Image (cartoon, rainbow, N blue to C red; front, side):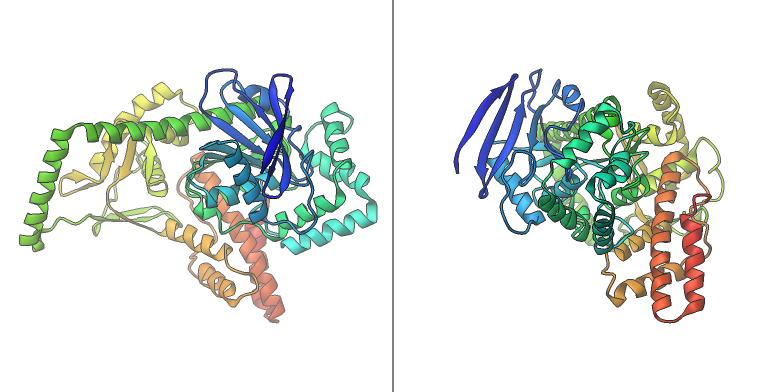
Length: 512
């Protein structure tokens, strides 16, 4: 490692650091206020650290910002040889270590989003929150086909034509003559064709799908409403595979949402980070306060010993958690330890709140209000929620004790939950991750579609969050049905191929 070449540029530190065998360019922008939080930016293919637009001005008020040119991009050095996610991840880790940044928020756009997924999966303790903008990790078209089609278009029409008629109009909603669109056009013209091709192949042929489930950081996904390269529906599928994720569609924006709608982008990023950091801090404070109360801690230990002793003697009287069986896939039905709860679901939003708690087993009061009462002012929604929760508690009781548990901020169901919809989601997720070339995916698809009693799924609840889940699920079913139609055609099973084709059209039709 050599000492970086540091330049002072308009109040910001601009540097080159030699790390992991390459000279990387970066810009460190200090917060306008006193802050301990840092956001690291990873740009997309064809972009560089200079094209983050006005979101830099909005975010530097509250955060230190680290803008990086990935190897081979912008002013960073290009090294001969193939590129890989491991290589880029090692670059970023070496730079973070070089700058002595302990933990940070990681923001990635397109290619940078895929890289952010790889980094967060490998170094979960370093990433506080993850923001992914316009990523294509889950995409219905095979990566090799995407690359082949793109190369064919370039060879037929040339780069300038592709940029003007396909790429730039997807990146931004601004007209091609607009200054912002012209900046993007000129930026792509100056990109190394060899480096762009390497990154394009990596992004499409080695999508980090398996890493999604390993992400432990709270994750915000943003998609542009007008993005025709990676439509929001496909990015919504990706969010479903990340354990703790939030997905928003940015209105009137293309792929580069931070250029088209900088104010909205800044607002949503700030709100997400502040909410997640507040939630984590609250959890830490609660934990610390409990440890500080030594008397209560001692009494709890005594009670635990007493309970263990009694359970050893009276095994037959052990009080096990009740079993909650919920049907949401093709209708609505609730059974608690064998007793079906028939009445009361159409009062005081009981069904809506209950479904959210089943699908999202642990929710905050604010999350629940946002999901079920999005148009009601939060203070009013929270006040009404107290009444609705008390009603729902009485509805789901077991041995005179409700399985719905609450504290000042959180709600959760204390029971063993068996839900056909959750099993269905898991089946789809596991099927999507299987190799297209193996027989396991075919067998899994057959079992998946055979388990469905009807084409219509999730018919009972009409909250927006539930409708979005339904739309993303139907999109996945459509993709899998289309894949099965191709497989049956290869096996000369024309009737089955036709049935799967109809099913794919049903789920993927814009009219549905």
